[in-house]
Length: 385
Image: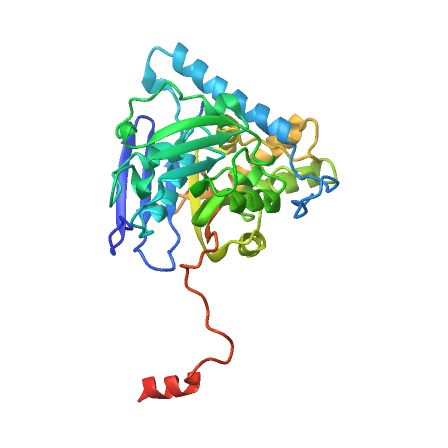
């Protein structure tokens, strides 16, 4: 079930040097947009072809190195800082998206649940902790009836970053296994292995989404579920615009700094192309506030979300970087309570949630064309009467 009440909820959570304001709109079949406001302190087109000859938008080796470096930096910080309150928490975005995705999983009414689940692009285990946060509605396991979770990721150091942290609340609800494997390669599992395949905020760096979705369909059991959250194409428009203006003014041209990301209209087509039935899609818009653009770029780097486009510049000149930061701070600052502009800026991310099902005889199917016994017009006239 969906845990938010029908009325609007405003929850404030005080964390050292950070304050999170989470506003969740009332639950409905078509979910309203959610917003999370986080105040933090300082510290070529995507290919839709499965052929190897197609031009790739992202350098997967660079992205793997970026994510592993982010994991190493976090571990070094944890192991060398005496006061743990001084450690900046960079997982807030992924933890929030994982919680919202698992909340959607809890909406699915299924007696046996999803005992065996695959998490693609698992990262540091955000989905695992979210599933272990509560018991299954029926039977055993964590949320959604997940008893065993296979966590798959290509960045080994990120995947194993919190491997020794097994004492979090509810960790005994769901067993897990970590597997290092490339998300773009053939998934190392037989056909019809998993009850559920889930992915949270990790597929936006995958070049061959059609190939991956086809592999997901292959490893799902009949009536198995594919549930995902992916960063959408309208994400970080403020940062994109700032770099475009800065490079035009300084260099007379532009280079990619953000994206490209998948568009909303393409997600349903990708699910259907992979042979998945009953697709359902909805969107969240996440807004995060930072003291300035420099802190935003620092957090993106520490999350492992630095630029990995194949057409990017080898090095962004310092004057372009400073110009982009100044444009961002000036153009996208947040108004204060008294109406004046303050030092905080806003970054917005579009998150697309989607679900598809492996076809099965038990699923509802449309009737044959021409089998209707009533006209739509008769029903409308009856309702007016």
